[in-house]
Length: 244
Image: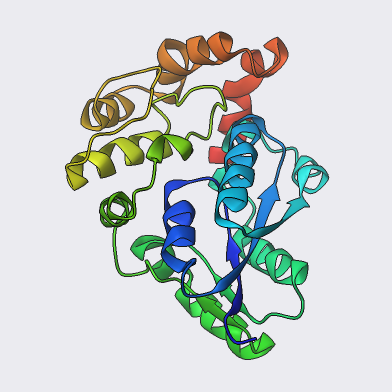
């Protein structure tokens, strides 16, 4: 059927709003990719709840062994330190439902622009269609849209550090804070660090990674107890290796 399409789901604001936005127009088939790192324990829970509430069939692709083979720090998995990781995810997502040729993604303007040339070539090569309805808008616009749709944003996840509470200091957490502020909509999120996004941005610029880690990230990692002591101890060196 023409209205049967695949949707990538992450538990985040963008893909959640996208699911609500599309649910009356299409028969959605959800795919979520699980790397099995700490924040995804919460993300997977939210994706399962979302698909159950909206009546969307869901397939979860296990990438845990794949990502571990690259010896990547689990906190930074979603930074996609593997080149063209998004292409791997697209192909895996499409493979979950081989009878369908249309995939909806929740990419925003910046994300889409950075990938558009490659995506155009992929679509021509595989004769597939990748649709990003939010490719011309910002996260604050998506939040406004989701607010009109009645979405409970407390049931979305952005933090790439923890699955217990939003840290408030990682880049996605700061982006989340900024978007709610720009949208002029109350942010229902509980953050461990409640400083504003501009305060955190300023601190991140002023402090070296080691200083930022010792003052903010390390105490948070110990608080959540989601990572081993060995990992917490070695995190600075791990990040130095991959941030070059």
